[in-house]
Image (tube, rainbow over all chains, first blue to last red):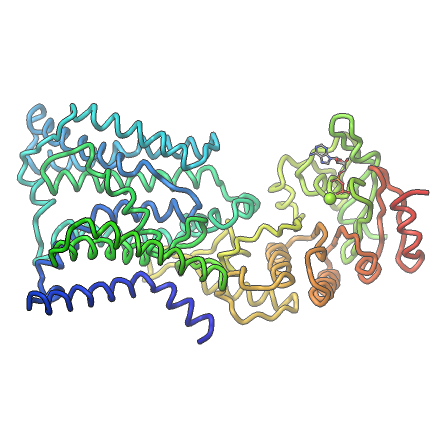
Length: 333
Length: 246
Ligand SMILES: Nc1ncnc2c1ncn2[C@@H]1O[C@H](COP(=O)(O)OP(=O)(O)O)[C@@H](O)[C@H]1O
Ligand SMILES: [Mg+2]
């Protein structure tokens, strides 16, 4: 096997994990309960819905990690967006007399719009003030968290709006609307990362900041846009969260921050920057969703999921390190 | 005598009390290679940074093709056709040769007649053509440049400069980090740049390299031009004496 074949296999590792997991759960379901796991459309839909929010966070995080940064604030940006969209959708109907459809649209857009604030502040701290991403976004983690709980008044914010519920739980030809939205965003992000200057410069910045600067790339503006994109993805995830549960909650994204980083890393991106792909991140998010849903399905103590996800992360990083030693970084093309 | 591409006249540069350059003059013609020699701290890097727009000079003039220029940034020097290749090369290791050549100025094409996408085909063709011009033949055009050897990476950095029609190439110790066969290859590269009519300034500590390729040798010593010699009218001993004084 040449290095080409080896690197292809390493690139596909998240997909290989995914297939192995599906085989494992299928076998277990068959042997233990005499039922099918993958053959059951309900399971597939549930996994899809389950994966949507962490995937949306992970898609934005992919750009950040490729640029050799990290965004710790996306979980609470998501919570902030969830609370704001629920409030605005309610206000739209109660105070402005909007019909439910318009109130729903206004609510979702407000959730996305409010995410611009943490995104721009993160970008400004990191790009202009040269604060390390870990510190700058950790500060924003606290600020977004506090703001989300304050706006929510310390409680969840229920929404009664049938259109909201439809976006979060409806299906078109049996496919959950959340999954359709996620697929559209996946294609958009893949296009951005692999086919635009923005994506190309993100890779260059992650590999060598000096190279990016000397090539005349506006590194400050690029950094701003990367953190803004991560926040907007989190904003969308928050807006869709309040649609799915017809309630906004400040802690909506709290457990998803680590899942999002894990998805990107399992997907083959390196925390040192310069490599990663959208396809890998999608597979990484599916791996996590299948582990979490599958363990519940086969009736194993839910705590095993933490162990399983942890093991997969460690294996991924080990594969990444040996691949780097052999070949250097990989990218989308 | 034709007009020089580059004419540095009586340039001085001070850092606080340090006289990094004091009244230094040199010129460079098209198709000429000038070696810049000198001990550590002699002012070689400061001189090329003045020429490439990193430092503003405190006194003196820099003329390009007869016209005095002042630039505010390295980008402006680059717009005037001056490309500098630093020792660290500043390549994006994870990107292909083509992507490095085009970094910051990527070409686009329309997919399906409407969707703007990066033109990787054009980048790969340009990479192949540029590397061929430098007599470096590579077939793995989509591989990241981290997959290539030191000399090949040097060629990529030079290729990036000549693709954008640099007239003057400045190289800071281009052979320092390379093994002997690769050093030869880079020396051959400098010769081919000369044949293509470029003006080349290179800093080197290696007298073998200097005598192999330079048309003139400018020696600096503690910020002052200690002398200028043609290789066939001097010896290694004399150059070393100029460098260290005495
Ligand atoms: N940015 C700077 N600030 C202060 N002093 C400098 C700076 N750059 C160079 N110098 C000083 O100028 C002198 C010339 O340095 P340099 O041009 O780097 O020499 P060389 O490249 O020949 O080794 C040295 O004394 C060095 O310490
Ligand atoms: Mg130096």
